Length: 381
Ligand code: ADP
Image 1 (cartoon, rainbow, N blue to C red):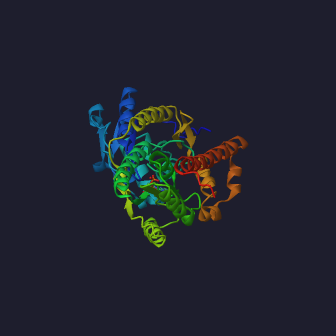
Image 2 (cartoon, rainbow, N blue to C red):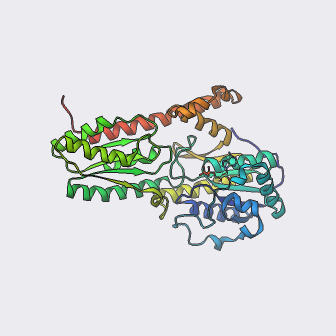
Image 3 (cartoon, rainbow, N blue to C red):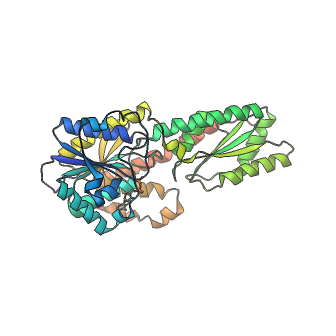
């Protein structure tokens, strides 16, 4: 489903901003958008500090030439900075941002960020007619409509490498380490890193976690000679990772096994760092596609990767898909989710959303099963 901009102004100048949580690869996206737009004869304005910069105008906005995005393709963070901007959730704030666009002759925007960033862009476009195209960048990869968001691969690799280090020392000292990883309410970083490091157990918000079964498994594996244990807990999981580490130690002590158990929280350290090849290449592809969509007169869409292809998706369809998926595992979301919301979409779009939700559910279950299959000693009862 593609939405045409009602604004029939030919696009001559675009603005680019990064908003919400930062992610490695945002700079590569800023560079791709800037260089490609310039190549197509479009002026580019770099907007600093996300929507805050758009509201404040002038001092936060700089005309970019090709050299302004030199030497940033390999840099983490975002050279145009990011900010959370509550003012932009209010109509007055959005009106100020639209006025900035008019004052500076910005005919369209490319917004790089997560779902919050896209909802802001949607408001700006629908209320004030500024065409907006989004590029997903979030290490959590928690946007249902896209298989992939920029930053995710870098965060996965950083998480994996950090757990590998813990595993080394756990092996030396015959320890267990409970690791809380990033991901917000999404367990993707947890399930992929669990498989990649050979974790003994993994807990995510999307599925219930059996603490006793995990400890039993650790005890049985120790009896079979295993020295190191890694338990991966997603930050959004309904379990206190630090307390669980203490519990493992206490229960194993009671069982006269005494597995010393440490706790580690990686937190924001995995948000930084040089982007991986996948993040840089995805940023390049999505950056170019976003400019093409804007120049084709499209708005309220963001770039998605589906089965390896880059496609545009309507922001409202994506929002509906997000809500529908989250209602499958989050009681609070399930309470708020109104299935009749889908009635405003065509049967084809509804079927597409159902397919996306089913794919996400299958991905979670497949990875959890894979983790279990490769980590468990065959336990014969
Ligand atoms: P992310 O883009 O990573 O999801 P946030 O949810 O913090 O991060 O959103 C980034 C910014 O987008 C917010 O600070 C706010 O300015 C804007 N925004 C978020 N949600 C909305 C909304 N529902 N309506 C309008 N603007 C929003």
